[in-house]
Each structure stands twice: as C-alpha cells, then as structure tokens.
Amino acid sequence: MKYNLDKHHRRSIRLKGYDYSQPGWYFITICVQNREMLFGDMVDGKIILNDAGELVKNEWIKTDSIRENINIDYYVIMPNHMHGIIQIIEMPDIVGAHGYVPLQQRNMPQRQTEQFGKSTQNSIPTIIKLFKSTTTKQINRLQNTPGLKIWQRNYYEHIIRNELELNRIRQYIIENPLKWKNDKYYAGHHLNLY
Image 1: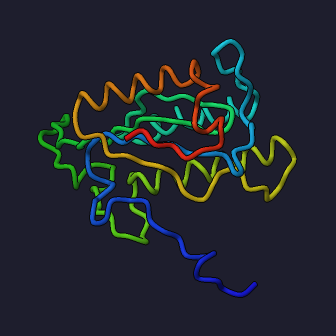
Image 2: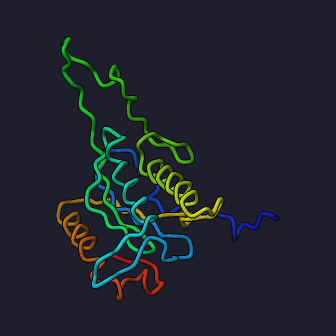
Image 3: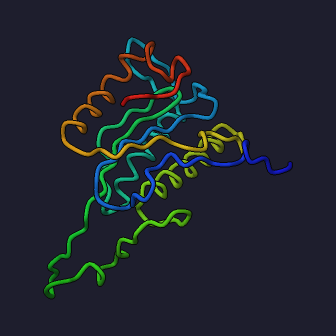
C-alpha cells in the first residue's frame, strides 16, 4: 500500500509541549474499533460486562497495582468505550531502615521527562499504549480472533486542572451508564464534554 499523507498522517490530540509524565489528574476515554459493542450490554441503566469487558476492567485496575506512582480513580467500562481518571503522583524521597534514601537510589527509576515519539515509563501515552496492547492480546486470545484490532488508534485525554473539574468528571463517569441512550458514543458522535 502506498503512503497517503491524508490517510496515514496521525494528528496529535495532545496538548503541545505538555509533559504527560508529570504529576496530575488525567481524564481518559478509549473507544473500541468502529465503536462495536464488545464489552457487554446495558440493562436498566447498568452495564453488564461480558468476559471481554471483565478483562478490560481487571487490566485497568491492575494499572494501579503495577505502578507505584499511579492511582486509578473513577472509571466505567461501557459496551463500546471506557472512561477513567488516572492520577500520577510525585514520588517523594523516603527514609529507610538505614536512613534517608533519595529517589534515585530506590528500586524505582527516576521520572523521565516525556519526549514526543519516545516511550517514557509511567507517562499517560505509555500507560494507554501498554493497556491497549495487553487487552487486545488477551481479548483476541479469549475470542480466538488473532490479529483483530480491538481499540481505535487514538484516545481522548484531558488534563484535569482543579477539584471542581475533577468532581464534575467523576459525576459524568458515574452517570454515564444511566445516560447511555443519550451518550454520544451510543449515537455514534464524537465526545464533546467541554
């Protein structure tokens, strides 16, 4: 296939110059390829996850336990997309049994400044890339569909700037299943919260 600039050029949806590995709160939305209803069904305003949906849920929660400086806050897995809030925490120096242990001497790599196009451990792009890759492999194994693309190429992220905004997004996540029939993903439109 020949390279087509219009077709193959990936437009960045990220904030130019922002370091997505720095401490803060981030609202993430990831959509299923072609918005297929892959993760379960909505019944009376509640999501009933199938095996693929449970797998996605478990991997999302696992993101928190395998990364020392990451907290998974509110999230919801919907039939064809998911929303979640990730908090990146600044890792302080600690005092160990033998005295002060600076961060650079701990068993954890120091935070690297994110650079466009290069994976940076525990940055939002790296976390999402690994999450999508892991869940894709597991779902394809579960459904015996090797090589099937599960997720859309990009994802939506929003830097949460204050507590008011954090609480508003948490409420949006809580209410998402109740508003499924009016959800922009249900109707096939682009998300526009702001």
